[in-house]
Image 1 (cartoon, rainbow, N blue to C red):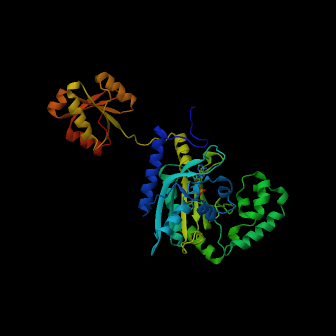
Image 2: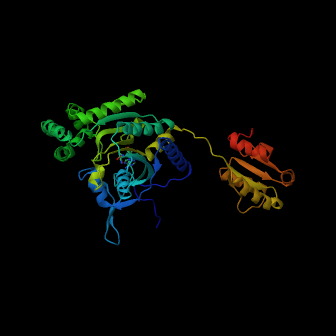
Image 3: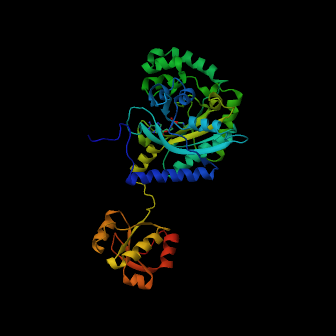
Length: 419
Ligand code: HAM
C-alpha cells in the first residue's frame, strides 16, 4: 500500500517551504511593529466553540467542520479558523483584564470543502486580533497592517469594505431585504431560496450570476445603519483616506461567518480565479459575550497563506537567496580542522559538512547537489595562514580571505565575495 497525503492536503518542502517562511516572517515583523504579540492555540477545540460562534447556518458549521469524538467521549473539532480560539483563550486566561490585547497567530486550519485551486481541506492562515476596544482606530490598524503585508510581498489587491451593522440596526435591514428577495424568489438559485429565510445576508454574497443580478438592486445595508454604526464607519473611512489607503465600498460584501458586526473587509486578487480573497476580516463586538465572557469588542483579519504562495510562485518573484556553504577538507589530513571550522562558522552562516567524505572531487559534487552556493576549502595553506578560501560553485572562481575579512563580508556585504 502506498500512502498519499489525504485529499485536499499537500506536503510543503523545498522552494515552497521557503516562500511560506518568508510570508510568515514578513507577517510577524509587521505585526510586531504594530505592537502585536504571538498566540498559539490548540489545533483542536471543543466543537461547541465553533458552532456557537461561527453561526449554525454558516457553511463552515453546516458542512465543513472536521468533528470527532475522542476516547473520553468529548466532541472535538479541528479548528476551521483562528478567531474563536483566540477569544476563548482571552476569556479563559483573562488576557484583556484592564486593557485591550493585540495578538497574531499562524497555523493550520481545517475545512471539509470541495478542493479546488486556492481551496484546500488543510490550509494555513496568518491572522491577528485586537480585543477589548471599539475604537475605529483598531479597525484601521487591522486593515493598515494586513494590507502592508501584501504590499511588502508586492501582491496586488483590491480592498473591499462594508459595514454589516449590529444587533440594533441589522434586524430592520434583514426585514427589508427579505421583503425585496421574496419578490424575486423564483429568480434565485436553489441554495439562496433557503438562505433567504435562514440567513438572507448571505444571498448578497452568492456567486451565481442569477442571484448577482437580483441583488444588484437590493437595498443596501449602509442605508440602514444606526447612528453608532454609521459614525464608526465614517471615522474608519476617514482614517483610511488620511493614510491614503485605497478601498472600494462594496455594500454586498458580507462575510461567511456569522460573528461580524460593523466593519467587514476583504482583499481580492483577481489572478486567482474564483477563490480570490487573499485576506478577510472585520469587527465582532458580540463574540466574547456569546462565548460566555464579558463584553469584549474585537476586530481582526486572517489571510490564506496558500493563496499568497500561489501568487508569488506565479509571479516568479525572487527573494534574496540565503546562501548555503559546504566546508570541504582538501585531503583527509585536514578533516578534523575542517570539522572544527564548520562548528565555528555555524555561528554566522548555514554550513554543511560532507557526509561519507572520500575526496575533494566527490565532496564538491555533493555540495552542488545539496544546493550550496559556495565551498569553503580547507588545505594545509589555509590551516598554516589561518585563511578562509571560498569557491563559487556556479562559476568555479576562488578567492582567499583572512577570517576577519570573511566575517565582515558575510555580516555587512550579504555574502558578496566578488567572485
Ligand atoms: P475567512 O474569510 O473564512 O475568515 O478566511 C480568511 C482567509 O483564509 C480567506 O480570505 C482565504 O484567503 C483563506 N481561506 C479560507 N478558507 C480556505 C480554504 N479552504 N483553503 C485555502 N484558503 C482558505 C476567517 O477565517 C476569520 N477568522 C478572519 C477574521 C479574523 N475575522 C476577524 N478576525
